[in-house]
Image (cartoon, rainbow, N blue to C red; front, top):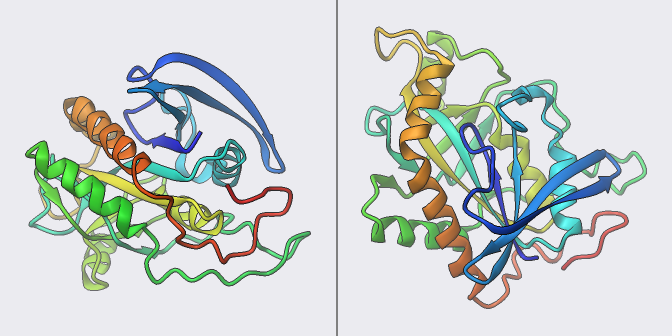
Length: 264
């Protein structure tokens, strides 16, 4: 099973897959229920990042268990989705952004598999954290679908679950950020450590705090995601099927393997 989707806010079920089943994967970090199924003849794994019905808060997601579980199933390509706020006036609600960089401003999360506690200490290169091959394929698919799609951007991660203050949004802009969110890091970092090609489709659901007169609500975020749900699913799946037809990617294969797992 080479292909996987990690669904963010608003994407909690694999209705787009046929012949689905639940697979319980035991990892060193806890158990993970992975939903598997078929799409256009390809096996696809699916994990709802927040669990069913958005029950898991951003700071309590078991990121290490999720990535480990997908790696153990043989996944080589992950397309994720993230609902984000925009701090860039050119990226408006309803736009899609294929981020290529991130800035991490969190303090409390487990960020690595290689922390020296029963593992080697590995300093993973993160010059290009998101797979450029996978991002290019997603962009081509998005253009073919005539989506309002930005081919790059910088994701600034805050702790959550609260939204950012107006001052924090201003800081994110000063640092060169384009969108803000709570969940894409450490997910992208762990995928990189696991030698899994990873990219995320960010959907702008609102402008950042202080950029409009409106207060931020989860209902607003969910409403924009619901409006774009079909397009997000179609884009993610079409990109995965396309990448599955490409020669195997060797990006990152020189990294140290995760203890107890072999590279696919």
